[in-house]
Length: 321
Ligand code: NAD
Image: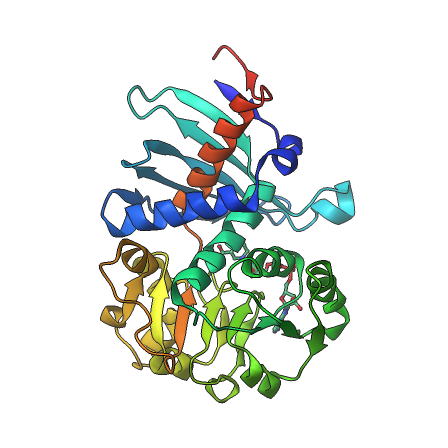
């Protein structure tokens, strides 16, 4: 069995490798070659922790495994550790033997950023110039850095519920040599692409704040009850997702479905656009929306990629198991 510790991920995994892995696995999901297992998520009654498993099997990439982990709210204060903790375990699909154990914390951030980037590549207008960020926390910086590689953006605008956090994304814009402007929510009308990545339970971005032709990647809503954008925006947009079952139950679409504004049939897999079996955006006026809920197969795909990179560089630790 090979071990790739968390401390090695930063030096091994690239945004390009994460992008390729996620794009491929979304395509495999839409082709019926890869499927996610039901998610387990439990409040374990210890340290207020939420712990669970996300797993799946990709028959095309021959990747089988799971990500185990969750959220320990006291980690930072009590122990100086980050609150989100996860580890990916891969298994040989021919034998069932454990094949790799990989640190999953940074990989989660990279695979989530890759998902919105893949959506921008396939759904945003080619002439997109202004990118808007709703959210400025830990994950927002990853989303923005990856998104900036998808179009020749000329400007970043941002809004955050806690405005004092906006310098986090301003820094990423500056690294890329782009101007940054803090805006109010109606100011988002200037954006050609919007990424929302917050932990909100009520919508911030309303349909009126969005101009025709915009692509929106909603990345924060991954649990029942969370919501970042007005449900009416999903009724107005062409809606795409990583996995339809998750989108309508724990993703942004849960609200538009509950309000009777859209049905399950209105939500398409982004993978189908990648495979060319769905046309995706068909006019420059359309609003497109990607409901990125986060699937186990994304974790397995980036973990498998990082194991290959670790083997190539002689960094993987081999143990007899
Ligand atoms: P974080 O704690 O670093 O940042 C939270 C962000 O939410 C900040 O911008 C904060 O200002 C904003 N926020 C908090 N309360 C708000 C409110 N009431 N209204 C509007 N905004 C509010 O967290 P993070 O690591 O950046 O993660 C952000 C979200 O992304 C979380 O909800 C997390 O569960 C989700 N997430 C999703 C995926 C996925 O695959 N879809 C993956 C990782 C994280």
